[in-house]
Length: 331
Image (tube, rainbow, N blue to C red; front, top):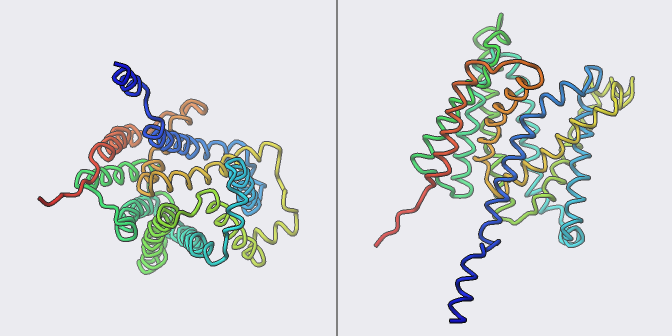
């Protein structure tokens, strides 16, 4: 009787080890979605036009490093990681993805100037496909047929949400060669690089067991060094030398800077625990959050594209979670 009573009591109490990981993943996903969705509005409201872009980006990277170090210290793993840290291990885990992301951002800037918004948006969403592809090649993570269909739905929703004002910007007056070699090719290469970098980050954390917070610190430092190197000849560098690093800043400028830094840490956690493919779902869902916040605070109603994309995003997330890939066991 005593044994059966004890067994019944154990069945009533949920095992935190079984439930906690799933709960944490959903918390990270929701928080990152909210941060991504709110970031454009925070930047628009609190960063003045006079603020030098490089200064705000560098401040964000510094804030990321500080937050990550605080979290490592709170975990009690900072001293251990400092003792185990090696330059080769850091470059292998974080150096390559950071360099890839820097190159990807440069290619996107080139492409955006030479393509109309519709073409750019459609091609840029192919990064979701390349993320799933590289996740398969690097990590062996397969997608079920229904999950592949969910990714297609997500790409369609992302295109609808990203079109925005239509095809007013870009390639008017551009030649066909310029559109191809300075527009289409760069954005496709950037999509491939985005998928590769995301998969490498996931590999470093899940396979090589590289700490997510430590990876955030390393990638922020590499990114900051690249930005500092670019200031020697860039217009932003000249502006910083002429007007000062904090030109145009107000106390409120730190709000989007800190928010962006928290988002960077959440990206690392989502990639580590949920994978790069699910991060794509977060990014698209965040576009819906942005539309909702614009309606609440600015009175701007959601566009017809947004209303069409909403059920597509909900359906794709539901399908992707409900029908994971299962291996067929041989008898």
